[in-house]
Image (cartoon, rainbow over all chains, first blue to last red; front, side, top):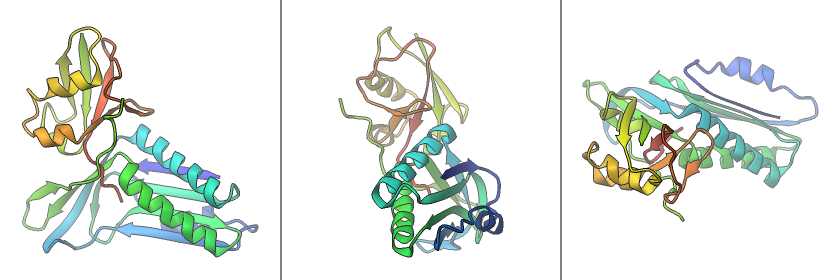
Length: 146
Length: 80
């Protein structure tokens, strides 16, 4: 089971934990990424997330399928990513992985967040306390082949 | 032919913030679109480091575009 959502809706971690319950799985790993109050010494008020949503959801699903092929087809993943303005302390991304045992749940969760950061068409603009803002640099997607 | 380009991330500083329309010769490729955008986008490095995509996949530079197509220009990504 794979559930993906890229949207402006706030991430409800309690709802996520309840929805993902599975008595066949003894391990649940929840990773939550939240907006930090400082970045490179600058005071951050919020981060505005931009996403090419249809492609982002396809890429995230593909990453989860890859994780199932590596650590087991029975693993279940719930991946939520925010768009729009997310204030300091709020969750911007949540990845919940459930598995029979903890090892594959931990490894799959780590794989998904690391791949998300370099493959999903999502961007962030930091909005600083002093009123300035800046699009952050990232990882180039490959389109130059062929 | 006319190609519509959806703008994301740092490209939102251009066009109307969400879309640019570019005129290309028939049979033009993604690589030609990238070159044509240099008239509108004043950050050559950003364009060079960006990919183009439709709603299902990233397009290779040799991909031929059709008249009326809408593609997205994707700057380097940084989700999470």
